[in-house]
Length: 409
Ligand code: NCD
Ligand code: ZN
Image (cartoon, rainbow, N blue to C red):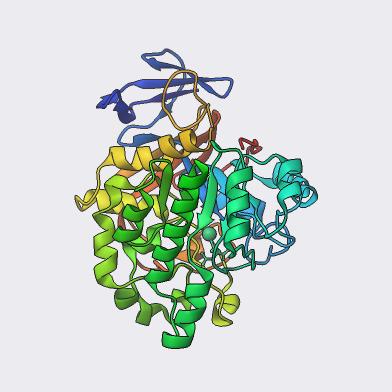
């Protein structure tokens, strides 16, 4: 396969060259003869890697499953997803982890990896399953995978291989409970306290710690006091706020950690230089589940477009998007063949039309959940084509083909 006339970054400069893909790998960048896909007017990114998705399989497949969730990923320009363990059963035992891998192998249509879940005492299971990453919830969220005592947190930090990412949901359970009693809300202080605890224990144990969906400027900076901290942001804390969107969304505005104030949202933009990754935290729930109080937003089909729109408004540069949504996730999670448009890397390419204007309509989306917190947002910049290891799987913004997803983590 040859992709012609696309623009992309090569060595820090925008170039327009052909990209040759052979046997699923980028075989060369330059000028090549033969049939090709005309990508005139499109900009090429390395296929995006979303390190934080909840595809709900097994057990919660009325919300999403590996097929619908990976189709949503492709539609959003994401060619690799890393899935969270809060399924039913949760991926907290070697057996459940293995069974979940089988499901993904059968149904995933983009590349994937699974995060293993920490519990207060599953140390032998972690050892047995040998996962490449684990997720630890310091505060309760969907799925109740809570590890809120310092002893268990410390033990996981000490036992899990030091160079592999240990992902924390940093909201401190004791603080959440206290705040609920006092104010009836889930405040940003719970995040700062959790970040401090996890950061200090990471320093003591000398390990890499990955802070999921960090919501405030201060939390980013507290995390970064330790040099081996990795910081993720989720799009909703950058594009939505309680003040601006809480009223409009009502019960649909519930997400953990919560949307913050408009002032905090604006401040978070000022921390983006220090942020390492974007995770969509794609956490789909049906409308009925949302009305019943479920926390979480779908995000796979809107995240890149929101950042492209921000680029068009002069708020962010394209290299930041490429770095935080492809290069860094690949490096941090050890996905050696992913994340770069260079010879030898996987032929995963996301081609976007930077100028296309479109309106978000969840009814057009692949996700099963059927709604979006960005409904009717008018965005400039849209995914047009996606190539997964040499297969054209999205064309004219629609999934046109299902290729078999491959395990990468
Ligand atoms: C997530 C979910 O629904 O699985 N919900 C959320 O509000 N983000 C769980 C989580 O990541 O905390
Ligand atoms: Zn999540």
